[in-house]
Structures are given as C-alpha cells and as structure tokens.
Image 1: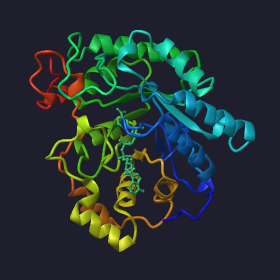
Image 2: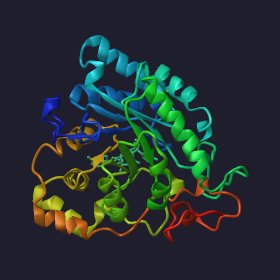
Image 3: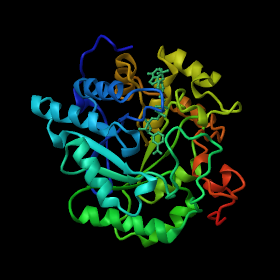
Image 4: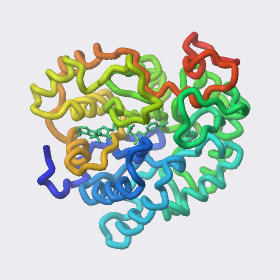
Length: 339
Ligand SMILES: NC(=O)c1ccc[n+]([C@@H]2O[C@H](COP(=O)([O-])OP(=O)(O)OC[C@H]3O[C@@H](n4cnc5c(N)ncnc54)[C@H](OP(=O)(O)O)[C@@H]3O)[C@@H](O)[C@H]2O)c1
C-alpha cells in the first residue's frame, strides 16, 4: 500500500486521447456515496485526492454533494494546488431534468463553482425518476420505456450547451447496443465518452467493442464490483469480483489487494476506471495501480475469462408499470424494449 506517499507527479498518470484530440486522465475518482458515505466524507476525499495527484472526478447532481465538492475545487484553485485546466471534471443530468438540461447544468456549475464542465452525461437513458433511497420494487407510475425522440430531445439540449461553451465533451451512460444504434446516427455532436458498468465479472465485451469501434472512449463505473453499493442493488447470486480465485491469485503474484488488479485490467484493456473510496490508503493505491507493475499478457488473458455477465445495477427502480423485470431495461433480445 502506498499510504506513506503524500503525492505523486500527476504527469506520471497515463492519459488517453479522445476523438476530439483532447487528453484525459486514464483513471479518476468516483463520488457516489452509495447511500452509505456522507457528502462531507466524500468532499474530504476529493480534497485529499487532488493533493495526492488525481485530476479526474466523476460527479453527478443526484449524488447530492456537488456543493461541497465545489468548495474543495475552489480551495484547490485559490491555494494554487491546481489550475482549472489541470482538472477533468464530469457531471450528469438526472432523470427528472431531461426536459430542462441547461437548468441542471447551471445548478451543477454553480454548486461546483465552475464556468464549464469537461464532460456532461445523460446519466440514465430514461426520464424515469425514483425517490432517493427507493426500494428495488418501487415503481413510479409515470415511468416509461426508452423513447428515441425523448432521448434525442435531451441530447440536443446537451449539444446546445456545448455550443454555448458550458460543456466540452458529451457523454451517454448505461446505454445498450440497440439504443446506441438508434441514437448515434441522429447526433449532431457525437459522444466522446460512454460510461457503463464494467468490472471483471461484468465485462460487457460486445458493448465495449461497439463503443471502441465508434471511436468513443469507454469509462467504467463500479470498477471494483462496488462492494459498498446500495442494498437495493444486492442479490444473493451476485459474484464478488475481488474474491474470484483467479483474480486473487494474480493479486498474490503482484503482492497487492485484488482491487488494484481490477483497475490494472480496466486500464490495460483501454477503459477509464473511476473507483470510489474515502480512505487515503485505498484511493492513493488506486491511482498508482496504473502507474506501476502492469499485468502480463497472460494475466490479461486470464482476466478476460472471468466475465460472468453479472450486472450489479439491474435498475429495477427505473422500470415502468407493467414491465416484466429488470432485463427489459437492457434490450437483452437485441431490440429496444418497447413495453
Ligand atoms: N453512471 C452511472 O450510472 C454510475 C453508476 C454507479 C457508479 N457510478 C460512478 O462510479 C463510481 C464507482 O462506483 P462505486 O463507488 O459504486 O464502486 P467501486 O468503485 O467499484 O467500489 C467502491 C468500494 O470499493 C472499495 N474499495 C475502493 N478502493 C479499494 C481498495 N484499494 N482496496 C480495497 N477496497 C477498495 C471501497 O469499499 P470499502 O469502503 O469497504 O473499503 C469502496 O466503497 C461511483 O462513485 C460513481 O462516480 C456511475
């Protein structure tokens, strides 16, 4: 563990070049408290992470902590620890704001105390709102299946915000191949980033390849298999990524925690992992995992065999009345689920 190191040189952290030509750090910090961690704990972690050398942060209005994280950013700029252009800051529009995206961006910019965002995502492809701390079987009677027209209306609002200089890159999240097939040809400005669930037991190989083939940079959420995810997203059959024997054996060979193997694999695969932790020893070693001691080709091949198609965020809370089950959200039969 690297908990004795106080900072690393951020220029030693690898970056990827996006389709726009812009560079982006190859690893970042997540900021979703999963209903367990307080906004104060998370903003303290962001402060510690900037000091340590993190330059990429994955925020969202629905995480309920952008105001405190904004104070941390302002403090870091005022102290001269970093300049605005040194950071890559991402945020997302929540499901209840799809018809008023600019208002959502304005609130996020005000909370984060910024004049622009490096990337802005449609957080979920559905405008289906659920209350905070909802249970998996809660249904909003107004919820509806995916609509290409509604999604594109939201996307065009992101494009307008891009034209105004409020957001530098556009992103989509939790998409499927059928949804992407339907919407990508309709975009005036294509997404540079797509954020989807990705961890060793849920590699989404076809979706991943589709994203890369379309010159879009994948960002992987829940890269460690999110052991602290909300209880509503836990079922008995879920695989614990960090306990898979082959992965544990690779971790032993490298003398590191299995978490760091998940991150090395994600980075070497070409994705940007955004692990979450409020603990310095964890978030520091997460960052340095990709600057040192890479996995061998043989280990990468072994990692590729660990996919269990184990989706953790099944998304039941976004279902509409009458929907069969959570698989309806993910277009399992290769077509967009209509009802
Ligand atoms: N776009 C979306 O819809 C979406 C959805 C979900 C998440 N996200 C983003 O993805 C980020 C990451 O996802 P996540 O927080 O759910 O899951 P995660 O990063 O896979 O897992 C986080 C948990 O892993 C443990 N951990 C972290 N570093 C560790 C280390 N070095 N060694 C051992 N354990 C470690 C911590 O648990 P302990 O506290 O027990 O150590 C931490 O709470 C979120 O914060 C959010 O920004 C986006």
